Length: 142
Image (tube, rainbow, N blue to C red; front, side, top):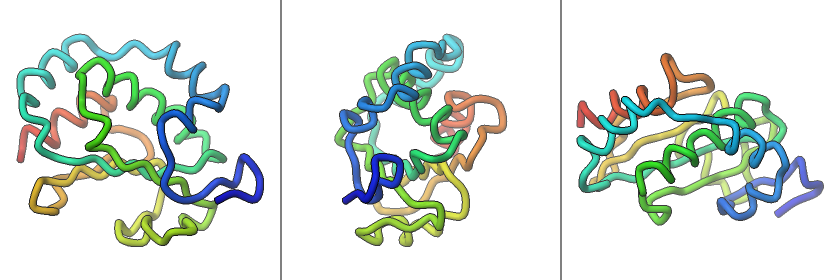
């Protein structure tokens, strides 16, 4: 559902995100840490968790981190079916109400959820080190 392209809200697909120039520019420019990606591949053999990505197309942090996230997804071969991406407005709401379930205060937020629905951890706004290192830390503790 949309009122303008920069105000899209609700569940979305990677393909829809790829229609934005900022997505492709950042995706193509980002070089994930080979060391962290290798470590992730070793730890993440089953991909038995889901990731919910909540972002705003209007948000500079989202425009930077979400394309980087998808670059890591591709490097890992992480299943796209295990990712739910939700667009929110500046009040962190979406037309479907999905974002409310995750108590989103800042975007982007990456929520890692185990097969039983328990939250393993989250990366909010800006990673502590980088997305791949923070991702590794979250799933290593599961």
